[in-house]
Amino acid sequence: MKNSSTALSTYIPFFTAAAFLLGCCALFSGCYTLKQGSALFGYLGKAVPLKSLLTGSSPGDPAPQDAEFARRVIDIRRFAQEELGLRETSNYTKYVEIDRDYLAAVVSASAADSFDRHEWWFPIVGSVPYKGFFNPADARKERTKLEKKDLDVWIRGVEAFSTLGFFSDPLYSYMKNYRPHRLADLIIHESTHATIYLKSHAQFNEELAEFIGSEGSRLYIEETFGVDSDEYRAIALSDENSAAFLGVIREIIAELEPIYESDLSREEKLQKKAAIIQAAKTRFAENYDTLFQNDNYRNFSDLPINNAYLELYRLYYENDHYFQDLYDRSGRDLPKFITAVKTLKSRGDPKGQLEKALGL
Image 1: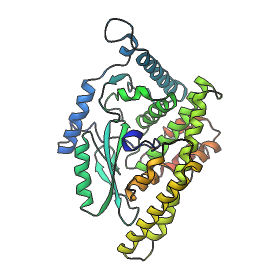
Image 2: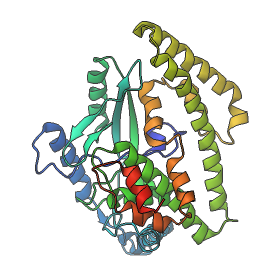
Image 3: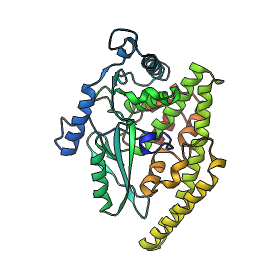
Image 4: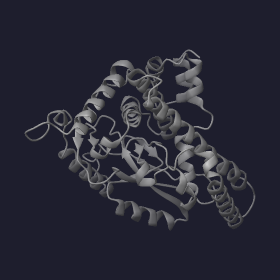
């Protein structure tokens, strides 16, 4: 899944989540699965062929924005499949009108005095550190249940998810406003999940799709617009601001980790946690203009930051640059990298398998 930057807040970079647990509602009768599956079928039932945006749904010429969007998606899919080697599917060949700027609300949870993440288990995908809802009210109910267990909880909006080939994943109307690099990142990211998904390896799946989505998007923009284009410069600016924000998050995590690993009482840990987070938010507000070149992250200091929020960054953004380093060492050839990824199996260590497949 790709997170909705506007649903969570306007400054969150596009981190991702894996498959949305659906596709199995015909096999399992749980209330949750059936309810979410019914909502998904409702969206899929409204989907129209993407190519209809090229011709218009009524007499006359189609809206220029619609036609340009359709052409861009078709070209990104071609690039992802033919040039990168991602799996050819019928994903993103259909389009759904929706009255909000995100697709679903996803709940994550963590212990309040450690970074021990809460997980849910589902058929097909195994253990995952999130649970999604098409109705935000259901997500809020889940949050209440988890908070009664003294867990930190965070709800975020996601802009897309992969059903891992069970259904033809559609595009949604809010995506028409995305810049080309953001649209390419989203499609390549989700196409990675559709190409390879290792059961019960959520963190590996997320970091891998995040890396391939980001690098694949960069290569697409370079080929399509050139390195001197405004679109390519937009990627550089976004990466620079994202790196600065991740640096702030990692500083907070680094301060908290020794506290959580200490012999302090739970109450003392929670007190120090609150002080560390508040101090970081104050520093952030004071130094904002020296750290960032836009306003996308400005309201961070107003958010009720907790461990569930911080754990998302531990999950979706590798701290050791493992995939980037592996990519560099293997010759910076993304199609070759993806070919190696396709050989991975859920059993065993996926990182060790990947290094072997790359001949490292």
